[in-house]
Image (cartoon, rainbow, N blue to C red; front, side, top):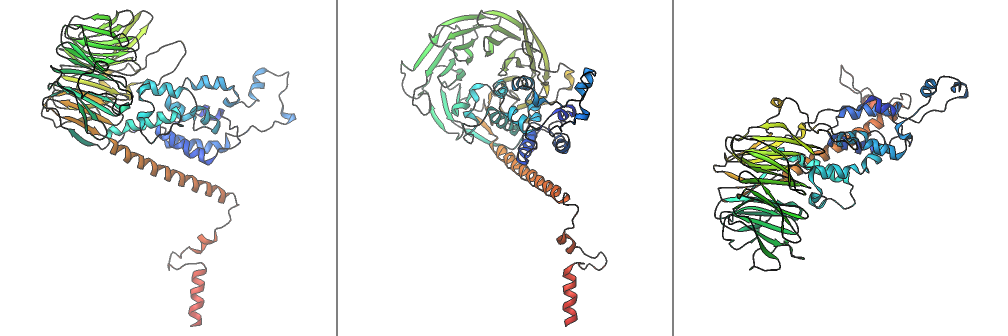
Length: 564
C-alpha cells in the first residue's frame, strides 16, 4: 500500500538554538510522542534526530554569570544584549500564542517537538479548531471521526486523526454494490454525520441506506417524475424533480434514521415548494437557507424558517451545479461559472467559457476560496477566488484532463477531489501540493496557492475504472467514495481496510521508536560509567581462529577434560 511520501523538513537551527527547556530536561516519553506526531505531519526522522542531539548540549538552563564576567553598565548596549541569554519561552504566553497563530499545521508539529513547554502550548492552541473547520467543516467534527475517539480529546487530536484518515485513499479498498433501483441512478448524497446515504434517479423514488452496513433502510413512494438532485442535513431532506418542485421531509425527533420517507404523506413533516418553471437540477442546504438551481435559468434562495423564496438569481443559460458558502454562491450555466453575493443578490464575478462546451459539474472547498469545475471536454479546472473590498478576482490554478468523456459530477473532501465521468471512470486528485504554506496575518488576506507553471501539475493520483456505462454522480466521505450511474446500482469504495492496515503499521513504528529510545538511553548510561567492561560480553567472545570461547566457558571445559 503506497502512501504519499512527505517532503523532509528540517527544524530551523536558529529556532532550536533560541529554545529553552523550562523544566531543565526533556522527558523521554515526551520525545517519543513528539516524534510520532512529527511523522504524522511529514517531519522527517533526520529533523527529529538532529534535534535530539542538540537538546543535550544546547537546550539547557542558562548558567549563572560570575560577577567578574558581568557586563559593564557603561559599555555599549549591543554588548549587553550579546551577553544576556534569552529564549522564546521567556516571552509572555499571550505573545507566544500570537507567534503560534502564524504557523501552519506542519510548523506547529515541528515546534511541539522542541520542548515540553512548547509541546503543551502548541497542542492546546485554539488554532487547531480553525485548521479543522477550514479543511473539513464544523459539521464533520467530531462525532463522524469514529466511535474510537473520546470526547476529552483536543482539536489537535481530531485534526491528526482526520489527516491520518485522508491518506487511506491511496490504499487497499473493498467494493460494495447496492441493488434496489430499477433504472439509472442520477444522484447520490452522503450524510456522513448520521451514517446515511440517499440516492435517487429515473425510477422516481428516493432511497435511504445505512452507509456502514450497505442495507436499504427505506424507499419513498413514487414522486411522479425523475429526481435529479438530493441534499440533506440532520434537520431536512430535499429532493428536486423534473416537474419543477422541491419535495421536503423534516427530521422526526427520536427517529433512529431521522426521516420517515416510507409512509404516506404527513403534512407536518412532508411538503413541497413550487416556483420553478423547469426541472430542478441541483440542490444545496446551509443552516438557514435552501438553494435550488433549475433549467428555467434561475437559482432560487429559500428561507428555511418561512419556506419562502427570498432571492432569485438569473442566469443566461440552464443552471447545472451550485455550491454555497457563507454569503456567497457559485453556480454554473452553459459554459460559464458565476459567483454571487446572496445577501444582496449581486453578481460578484463571472468566469466566461470555463470549458469547451457545457460546464457540467461544480465543487467547492469548505473555506469557499477554491472552485473546481468539470466540463463536457473531460477537463477539470481549479480556480482560486479572492475578494478585495468590492472587487473579486478569479485565478486559474490547475487543469487536469483525466477523462475522455464529460465530467458529470465532482466532490471534494480535503485533500481529495474525486470526479465521475461518462467514460465510466473515477479520478482521485490530491490538491494538497497546490497549496502553499499559509501565513496567517491579522487583517490581511493573501493567495493560498502557488501560481506557477500549470504544466508541472501532477496527474491524478489514482483512477478507478472498469465500468462500461456512464457514471452520473459521486460523493466522498472520510473513508468512502459513493457513485451512481446508468447501471442502476450504487457502488461504494470502502477504504476502512487501508485505515486499519496503516494503523497497525503506525503502531509497529511506534514500538520500534520506543525501543530505539530505550537502547539510546541505556547506551548513554553505560558510557557514563567510565568505560567499564561488560563481563558478559567478554565472556561471550570467540577466538577468531579456533572458534572457541575465550571466557570462563572455555576454562571450565578445559578443566573438565584434565580431570578425565
